[in-house]
Length: 233
Image (cartoon, rainbow, N blue to C red; front, side, top):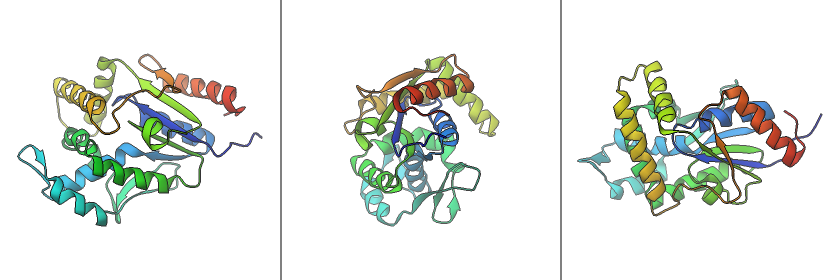
């Protein structure tokens, strides 16, 4: 049996490219701890929405910054290999995936003090190594020295359809047009923000999964892991 080294895999890319699904699949296949950085930003966004820190089309940064000091966002593993985001003792995994949160997560994540707060916690979560983490700036800012970096992309139409189907399955009513609009807005904000904009790291491997099944994505990463580290899935 080949021993998996204590490496960090950074998965970045555009929204709705299936980064989380892919990272969870890799985590299960190779025994990595999966951490969803996007969930952390969504958790901060949910906290801001629920506590009146977003109103009139703007974020009350003066109220949000001190509130982060007492905000207990952390991941728990229910025993099936997955990880879920908790705020204190409350499981908020479902609440953070709504369109309302999606509409505000990019502006929230563009705030420098929010990014610093999240980065500090991500580093503390991954101190034991053998971690796979997905987000927007994992390979460029959070873990620039990650042993393996992957940048995921897909066509706008494919990404919007995936997000629309996901919301429909959860009973969150919305239109395809609204989903596409939200997706393009998030793309622009994520790639143009002043702090840690979304971009492909120079040493990242690109994975365009527009026409790939999950099985094909797994075969792709197995080949990459074998070639780079001699690891068999």
